[in-house]
Image (cartoon, rainbow, N blue to C red; front, side, top):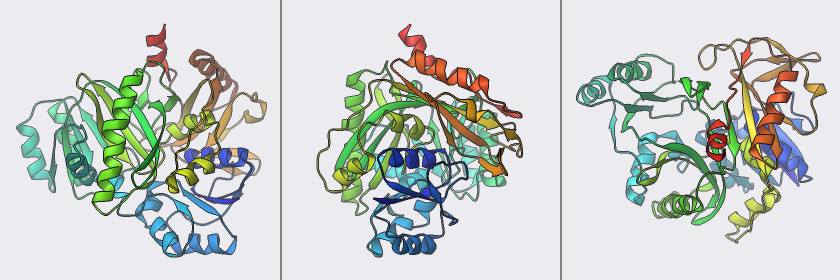
Length: 417
């Protein structure tokens, strides 16, 4: 088939790679010049009319949406109105990610376990609430913030600073509300699914590493690495999360008149009372996509068409584990250094994959032009082998003015050994 992937980052590179492996002709808008084997189309993710026009002209059979910005621009609504096949939620359903307060309302209605919370529309009332609370607290910008609008405040002063950043600066974009939650203690994990209405096909688990530096230190980022699946997560916990989170969410969205269709991401935490939801995303997680898709043995579009047609589909997964490490520019997640020349990719072994995100080309050179530059992954029979392959490959690259965590997958390996 002819398939259009909307987006430009590592998630979209992984989607395009998987679709290419399945034998499809892949277009990516706007894409990245370092994406091999695809046709990049110079159309921005939020230029909805140009995207649908391209899909019609080129006879695109399926369009897959990567970033949340395109979803909130209403790209799915427009494609559907024009009779074009597209996989992703409508703008109304994408509010699960576009508004933390909306997601909390849906969870409460669906009786989905999550943290207690309060919502505020101004800094003064939020600060009064903090003054009457005890740390730690979790402060969340209500709207989209590129995965960086969450502050886990271990002191009340940190919580106050987060309120200042949300209402008093443009650090997280134009925000009008804030959600302040109770702090949940436990191990975090990601559970995603293919969803269409009440039909849900769950994926395997993965675990993201949000903090910038080793040992889960430093600021929250969009994700510094991930691995999949989680070998130490009990099957019973997985089953409980599917039953108490994914299916109730899908059913409630249908009942509300805003059925969800697309990749549903549930960010979960395993507490003493069982798994609870930290957040929902209305698209494939990043960098989780880059470690889940290499494990997917089934053709991606086959799964998508099955869930849309409300048919069961026995997904086949590779017997093994994938680890992905994000290489980021110095200064990320604040002011990232750009313009650095990254080299050595041509000498990498075939057992690693590189999914480009914040890079471009200057002649023959690969050059950094963003925060998270690329994700390097490897799939092996064991987690330890996958980790060894990734970090061995990273040592072979010349990566000036960059950094990466050296402990991705460490929590799982500590449990195993």
